[in-house]
Length: 154
Image (cartoon, rainbow, N blue to C red; front, side):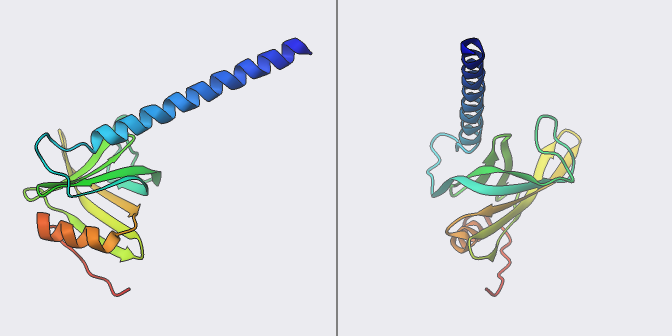
């Protein structure tokens, strides 16, 4: 009986350690993907927003197409770029040279769409996020980056 209890506790400890390590690794990937280049001042930032990411094609080691990829996301905005990052790393980056659309589709609902450059051509990416200041994010992205902003009556 003691051996069975001891092995159960050891197994539980191993799984807990593995789960905690995986959670820390995902957070590290998300935060490092959202980091802006040195010298670029941060204007707005959100950490750990609930998100769904949709991609046009499968990404090796990343999100899969034709599926709902529910995750946590970090957003960072400067005068030069808007970055969306998940545990897969940086999934979308909007700049003046590579604009996309940022819109508020309801209370606290922000939708960011754009293209990500790959070796086999551009790929469409859509991120649906829950953030407190969704309207403000859309307005500032339009003002700073020239992103298309679609205003919806709420």
